[in-house]
Amino acid sequence: MPRIDRYILSQLMTLFGFFALVLVSVYWINRAVSLFEQLISDGQTALVVLEFTALTLPLVISVVLPIAAFAASAYGTNRLASESELVAMQATGISPWRLARPVLVFGVLVGLMVALLVHAVVPMARGRLADRQAEIAQNVTAQFLRAGSFQYPAQGVTLYIRDIAADGRLVDFFLEDARDPGSQTTYTAAEALLVRTDEGPRLVMMQGMVQDLRHAGDRQSLSVTRFSELAYDLGSLIDTGASRKRDLRAYSTLRLMDPDPELLAATGATPDRALAEAHERLAKPFQAPVAALLGFGMLLLGGFSRFGVWRQVIWAVVALIVVQFLGTAAENQVAGNAARWPLIYVSPLAGAAICAAVLWLAARPRRLRGSPKPRAAKGRAA
Image (cartoon, rainbow, N blue to C red; front, side, top):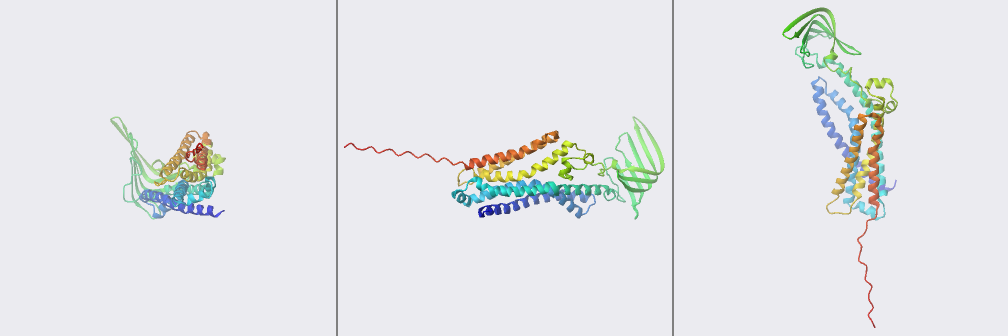
């Protein structure tokens, strides 16, 4: 690689690292605050909060990297222009197409990072996150089964446990379910056990009774049933994660390209939707070189101005917004009808066309102002 290419590439990579770090840090703080409040209130530790935040980072990094590439390209080109380095390069006869080569290499490198994230790291992180969410949701004892205080796991449901024995037995258990306006059911038991099953946690109550109070107009009826053992499904009270569908992003791209019945049953998705998710991953890395070339090419338009290149920067931002809008519109269309997955490639193709048009305009020689033709001198008559 020529020295000038290495110089431009090193400048862009340095700026890219700075912008990526800033954007990811902003998300980290916002996400960590919300997760900290949610998980700590559920009785989880700070290590669980840190783990969940780390598992959500690969997805947001894959979204942030193309934006950071655009910011680095635009800022780096502006710096080269303000320090007259770009003018000196162009004065030696280097065309905009030639100057765009290190920028394209930079965009391809960022695109490879995005591809590694969306095809390998993000599915692995999302799968681990889904497993950890299911584990925490199954741990109902840490969330709701607390001794000596009234708990309200759902609207209209009251839960009370006098004590929790060392072996896990719930002593003097009380549960009132008043979610149905026409019926109020109260469960009391001397002891209860929490049993985990494949369908979710079950509460096994022993030596108790069920009181069912029904309202029918002005009349009320009370029925009492005594039992020695009674199993109760806690999934009807709280979201234990057993019935939660798995995210498509937790599966590899190869499995999404040819989804099997097990994947479709676990996610509740259609084959077209799985195929659309796979093509979204394939198209996403192309956003990075397009964003980098947009930030570079737009700043080559226009001549020197003492007021800087703020107009070109605005046009570059507008062009990026247009490309992102096309991508969002295509995703909405695919979400409504997954068979329209070819629309996913409209955004990178449109961005590439804009980049080519901008570089072509920048490479065109500007017309010089026409100077007045010298008038022929009239000879004086002899």
